[in-house]
Image (cartoon, rainbow, N blue to C red; front, side, top):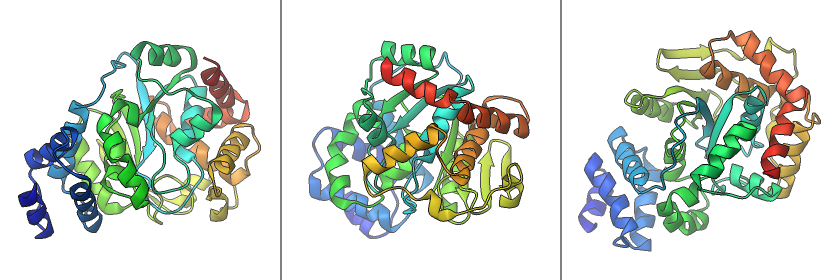
Length: 331
C-alpha cells in the first residue's frame, strides 16, 4: 500500500488491477483509516482515469450482495451529486413520476455525504424500510413499479468508508462511483454528472457496458436537468445538445434558480418532496421534475418527446406519482 500511495503522490495513475486491489485490501482490513483518507484525498485533486474507475467498480460489484431483477425493463435515475448546488431531490421525484406512467424503476441511492439530503434520507424520513431481500424487492416492483436499493446494505465495503465520508463532508471518488454501482443492474440508466470532464469519462466507460443510457450534464454546473442552462447529453448513439429554450418551450415558465434550492435539513427537504408530489410545487419546480422524467421515458420507450412529456406531466398532475409513493410505503 505504501508503494501505491507513493506512486499516487507522484501523480502516477493506477492500473485497473491496482485499483481493484485497493478495494479488496480495504474489505480485508489491510488498509487503515489514514491510508484510505489519503487515497480519497488524492482523487479529490484529480479525476480518476477510466482504468481506475473500472477497477474500483468491478471490485465493489464483486463484493456486493447480489439481487436478480433483470426480468424487468427498469431504469435508474441518479446523479453523482457533488455539484454543491443544494437542489431539492429532483431525480428521486422523477423516479416516482416515471413509475406513475406504468414503467419500472430500480432506484439506487444512499444518505448524502456532500449535501443536505440524499434519496435514502428522504425515504427513511417517510418511513420506508430498506431491504436487500430479492423477493421483497421484486414484490415492490410488481405492486408499485418501483423499488429502492439503499447502497450501504448492498455494498458492505461502503460501510467501511461511510465514517470517513461523513468526517470529510465533501464530494469524493465515491460520488463518482455511486451511479455505477446499482446492484439491480437496471437495463436503462439516466445518469447526471457534475462536470463535462466526468461526463466524457462516463461516456468512455459506458461504451463497454451493455446498458441503454443517457449521461446528462447541465452546462451551468448541475448534475441534472434544471432548465437553467443548456444540456450536454451522451448516449450510445453519440453526443447531443439540448438548448434550454427548446426544453422550456413545452410550458412557458419563468425560470427561477432559487426555486431549485433544497432546505436546511432533512425535514425541510422531505416536506418539499411531498409538496411537489402533492401538486403544491411551483410551476418551475414541477417543470424541472417532469423534464427529468421525460428524458427517462425517452430511454424506456420509442414514443416521441412530446408524448413522453405529456405522460410525465399527467403522472404528476393526476396524483399517480404520489399514489405510487403511498403504495410503496404501505407494503
